[in-house]
Image (cartoon, rainbow, N blue to C red; front, side, top):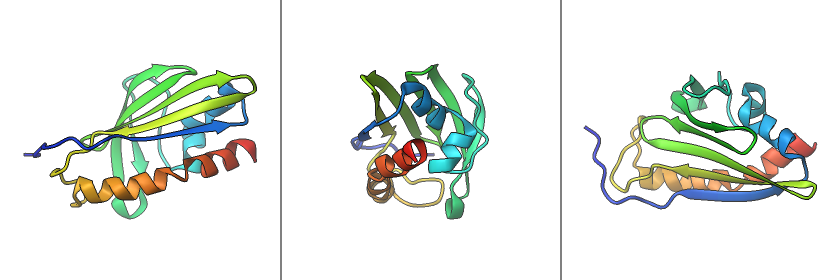
Length: 140
């Protein structure tokens, strides 16, 4: 049984991209787009769709689309406890994207045997590069 103790803060990253909301939405809500800047996958933008993110040495992670409001919000579960959401707001000729990675608990262990406290720090560092990778894909 999974032990849930103290909740840890969500990882939240906000970036402003020099692209239309439609272009950013395509990058975060299609299999090809997600694969280009994040991970290989079999994603489909359909509410309830179950898919997998291919996390390299960490294996294949089961996911499920739980919220879909094109082109403003996408949220999916990731593994046994995480949620990942993308919120988009169009401002002038740019799009503000906020990524939220939630579901962290101090004493919980991931499917690959590491404490959330350790993985959360690694992921927070990785998500800090979101703007660079996503901008290179969208704007490049």
